[in-house]
Image 1: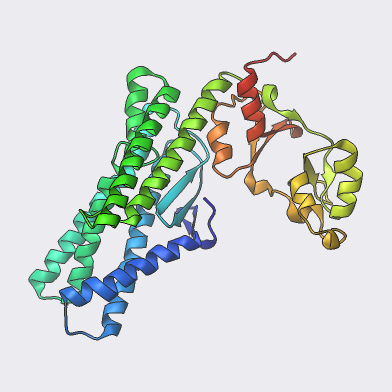
Image 2 (image 1 turned 120 degrees about the vertical axis):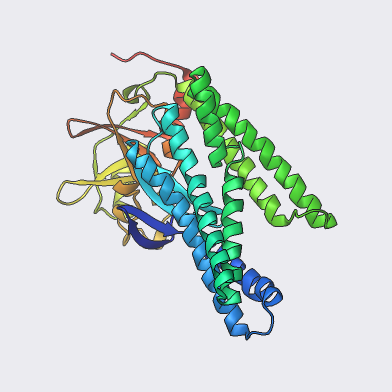
Length: 374
């Protein structure tokens, strides 16, 4: 999940949002300001309703952020690296660089998000009661009560035992603790995610078509997301099992010579890609420092009339999107890390680049099984 908007850092963790998060904010503001608030507190001006609706939407996004910050802080306390937090159309995600090392870490990281949401639900609920008792503004009371309900629903929904929801992580941690096999636990949790997501799709479509219950197309959309994400997690878990105890130096493609990032695309294709038939090449800057990697596909995608202007470094995968691993590091957990947005892993020893690993390399290695290197 890539953040299109950057909001800064919280406790040193980058925080951002995709443009789709603005859509959910607008939908909430419209639902509150255009429907709920006029019905609950009639007689006010439209501006008052829309201002209160916007405030409610902002506070709800803040609640989502607090939920993800809870995950991120506990993960970091467990020694896991946190790349950042991103809000998007269906909520938020704390992007972790590493997998939990133990079932206990898995459970603690998973459960803290719903715990934060439940705490917020209680806090907003008490604030709503206090406003009512003190005779505070009715409009504010309705918004705060809605926030209490929304956070309670968020907590309960996230506790469904279905990956990739927090409840699915809890299920994986409990199964992992029970039988000691993380891959098996991951597959079970992801299968539960497919079943729960399919149920939400059916329920949402039934409600949208017949008006029965509270199902809507939004419910079906959430179910579709669950099914898609759960299947991806299942595939990653199975791929990780196929990789077994393979190390990075058994999977990597030996790195060719580091190429200059300042070459134009024309020159780069002529002097490096075509003679070597390379599909991916590491780059160096003019001062000799690593400058990322570039793929042949990205170079060929540059229009012909611009290849003499655009430099290879302009279309490269930056160092921030690369993983750095040691030659003897097991690659089982690289499947999830590469699928999470880091498209290439660099195998480095003693400051020297030994090779590159892509998701395709992992898939080939899993299909071939372990191999011996001298």
